[in-house]
Image (tube, rainbow, N blue to C red; front, side, top):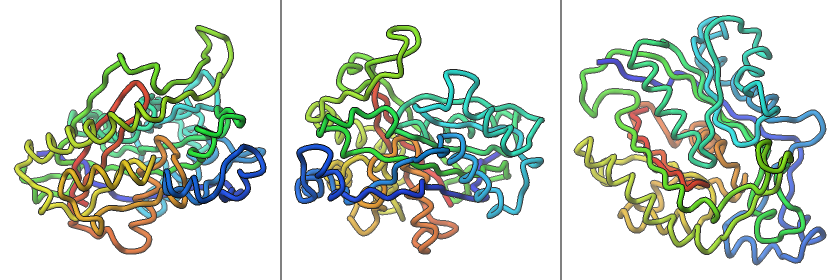
Length: 323
């Protein structure tokens, strides 16, 4: 059977690093409070000339270089983002232009913080369906542009960045020993919309709007929703937490990450945590975390890796991949 195998990875971050101490001069908060509640110590904030597309392009070029490929080898660019450069065209098309690619197709996918898991599952379907041989999957965000910098409950949580993977079709035996995407499980429930949303948009206010969140409500649902899809991934592949080499979660809050791992009996030493470095970068958080763990040698070829995320909507999902 056809599997979607990871060939290359890349990451890009804005130049400006903003430690917690710097935010103490903007809103009533403290480094101690932020670290205790979230685990975040710093984040990267996009400056002039740095956009979702420019960060996505940089991550994509790095992923292509590591894969030993060029844009000519890519059939499809899929960008997960909630902060596009323009209402239209898609940021994916913008990145396609930046890469000098005039063939194939490109579009954006919007599932907020779950976006990269949704995008990986979507790319896998295109590859297994024979519509693409190689896909550039990008998670890119500039959440700093939709934050209310007077709201101390949200502005301290988020950051900007981009990450990318190159997926390529390869033959597998149809077992969990195969390299590539093994299973994906996606969920959503729109009844939770008001708990995490942006209060603007072209069709409603004609403005970009700002992020609004009921933090306690999000926290209350997060662990249960995350464990639901991870358990579904284990069940569908006949694997367990003991078989897992790495859990790479969406980097929103250290307490959510640790709570989910504990409920699933996944030891902390198998969990990749980068929320302290990047903050919550929404759809970019998983590929950024993967990049860190690949750079330092933790994730190796053959490892069984679980990706999971939950985001506004609510949306949530998990994807199991053999590296």
